[in-house]
Length: 89
Length: 393
Image (tube, each protein chain N blue to C red):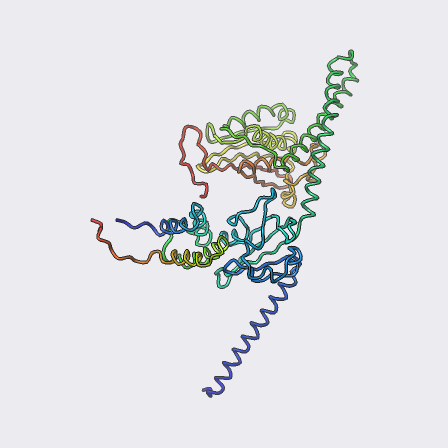
């Protein structure tokens, strides 16, 4: 089964922390700081993106562990996972 | 070949020089920060206040110890014009990281003693090697300016109401006299009364302009939207102006690339916008001039432009066009009359419709005013079906 795109996964993570505002929060920063179509987000974009999301999110919560966890989760996207038994035929 | 001792001393010297430069840079930055004539607050990458200058402390009524190290959104409480707390997501300090650019805003800050002050805020990101490491906010107290502006708007509102009543009564009585209710009139009397009536009418128009502006300033303008066919609306307005265009022997053309252009808008207010643009084109275009009206619909926008061969506006004067009571000096300003509120009102209404207005002009070459309606979430006309666009796009 095909894995979700990096962008879709990033939105899911953002919504975990920010609720429904997560997608807009992420989308605006991808658009502004990376200048790409959000759906074309790639792993190599994540370090630059997270530098901005980290500071922005730090103004939404004063729980730095929460900020750190959000940033780490975003950065871990795109890391290859072991192939599951459900293979593409 | 250098001796090891020399080599070491060169390195040491370089390090010293670097440190000296670094210290100098810091001292300069410190002096610059302290000499800012407005309140200044620096936040770090955790959203905590890392530095604050004396003016900011005086304005907010806190001590350094009470603010430095505190989480900015909690320490500096901001409200909007209506006194509602501004959500963190909408504060300029966050917006600056979403846009990466300086952000300007007007908000109200809560002082330590509970009083409020209106402030104009500018926030910029602090970048190190193109990466954000914090933000700097500069703000100034504009409470007096806001109070003065509010008092002025209130005065305009009250004065206009008080002026309208007697002016309307004058109009009624003039109409009655001109209608023969007080006996028959000589030709001279009729000419004089007609002049009085026309000037009273002009006075009432100015008073109504003032009242509209007062309502706009008080955010009391309600936009009641319905589907409006812009092709048809423009056509109707041109017909309404035909007598005026004919009187000035102006050549008017209207072209549109679609049969109908449906847009969700307040028809009364939208009519005011377009009437104002056509009225200006009529007034500021000399006799026998040309006025070209064009409506263009694309997938994402509907543009309505009014182009004239009138007196035109200098580049320097263009920004003044949309100010309250602005009058641009040109050969037709005096004869054209007006309160200097028309385009101010137009811009307000255009903005309330989520549209924008653009002007291009040059003296003696004419002007083009273009209203651009965004078709986001709008249906297309002519039976075509366009996809509904995401508002965020």
